[in-house]
Length: 196
Image 1 (cartoon, rainbow, N blue to C red):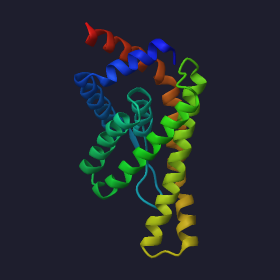
Image 2 (image 1 turned 90 degrees about the horizontal axis):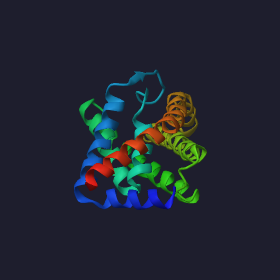
Image 3 (image 1 turned 180 degrees about the horizontal axis):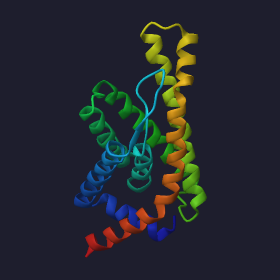
Image 4 (image 1 turned 45 degrees about the vertical axis):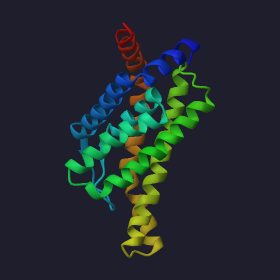
């Protein structure tokens, strides 16, 4: 990211009203991205589906930073869970969002926040996708183990449930890579308008 962008990003994410608007906007877009654009899939553990929620969480973190992006993602995904019969899953999803937000932030930091190369944004999205796959595997294994399955059965069932997560991870890489530049331009326009 150029020095100019770094200054702009800091300005609009520290402005009280602009921050509230952007966190709310990203939360709403994340909710819509999972509520209206999902395809249910069969799985041995849970009720997975293909959706855009994870992609939008990654974009939230890239533009708003770790804390604000994680809050926006947690609100969007948590609201979806509560309103669609997955309320018991909401705390786990919120933990997922914060872990993914942390990984996204750290990988972006390792890349020196350089968003001039789309490859860097793609690498961040790949890291987020891989993190989600690992988290889903661990969560599935733990759920089944706590429900009384032996460890081998829990691991096998969790592995068999990973295709939906893998598809979502691939879509995260594609969507984040495609949407980053247009969203960045839209936010720069928002920043210019809010400074006027």
